[in-house]
Image 1 (tube, rainbow, N blue to C red):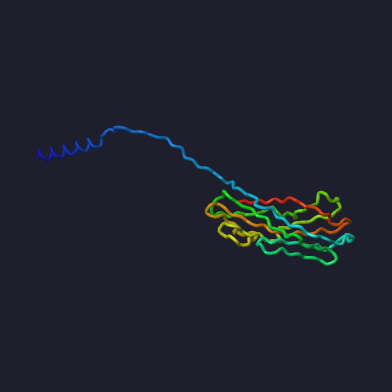
Image 2: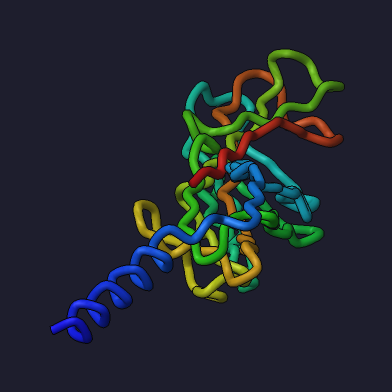
Length: 205
């Protein structure tokens, strides 16, 4: 009986000794969690659209004419002309070239959209011509846009699609075609010189 009680007391004492072991040393460190937000990316103009050098004629007496058009495709195929004999005609002396743009520093494998470059068309005017002289109107949505790079390289970009997607490096580009249209003749014919007008491209996530 004495041995059993003695053994139980020894076990209990050993258990209490283990449970009450004091902390010898303790150190703390305070860290700061960090996150960086980068919604911005880089949109670069590689080349603006250029409709080349054209001979343009139309009936300067008529108050209304059927417009002639000159279309520069995005896919590299030859430009096309639509003329109305005796009213408005375009002949290309130097072929036009499409515009090209590049997106970098964007999120990988992410869809981008393009907007705000064809609201009502873009008017091109000759600063050296009389105010009554006709200019041109550029329509972008009547032409084509082609994807360069990204995960859909070489495909035609259709409005409302999710085809314009960046690659693993967050990069993609696109080629922008356009349609140049003559304006109705008034009194003055087209004057030699450079016709220019600004257009704005909005690319967004």
